Length: 318
Image (cartoon, rainbow, N blue to C red; front, side, top):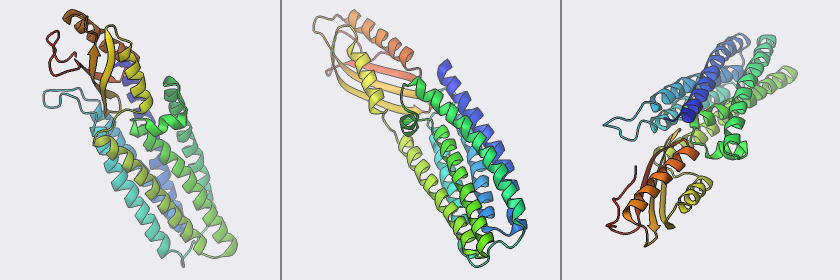
């Protein structure tokens, strides 16, 4: 793994750990306030934060495992384990938390909060501040990485293979929205005495969790089964290859995201008829070095001349 890729991985690990510690404390506070106040929305928010905490733990495991170096049994490394763990996290925690919140909300539609709301408001306020701090750190990392690629943060978030960053961003955003929903449900229940508002808030929090679960699950499964790089990245790689000496065209270009910080590139290249075998080999080595220098996440490069067999050179450069 390159130094830059290792730095990105370290930033993601720190972001995940900060979010996990905050979510654990928030979950306990919400649970206590929900039990004392009898609020379905607060209990759902506790489940929400508990789901976030478990997710962060699983993402941490994913990041640590994906950073293991390649070996004989896994020659392309362990990068895809990050997507497996992240997909499991989405399925097991968000869906579980979402279904619990929805079910609990329906059961509480006619049995709303009856205790002291003051503690719940205090916990919601503190939770909002802590979640905002975590969300702020995620935004900083998102902007830093999007600037590295000279793209908008929204575009980077949609295409980034670092699903841990995407997960933390969506979790923090959903947490802030969930806190607003819980506070609104409590306030309306307190003002009207109607428990429907508190129960409805719990249901909406559950729906929010399910939306996040489906979004993250789809992103991770897509990467897990094998996904090419974004069009802009592929275009940049193609331009780099076409700029090589003695190259007339790039016939086939295949890219694959192996993990959050590892990429494989394979291409069939049409060399000029006048190029010798030594010139082709030198060009392939130079192109590989240029690709790795420009794109630090490129771990493997396979280049071969266009055609069944070219007597001037071997079949690949790596």
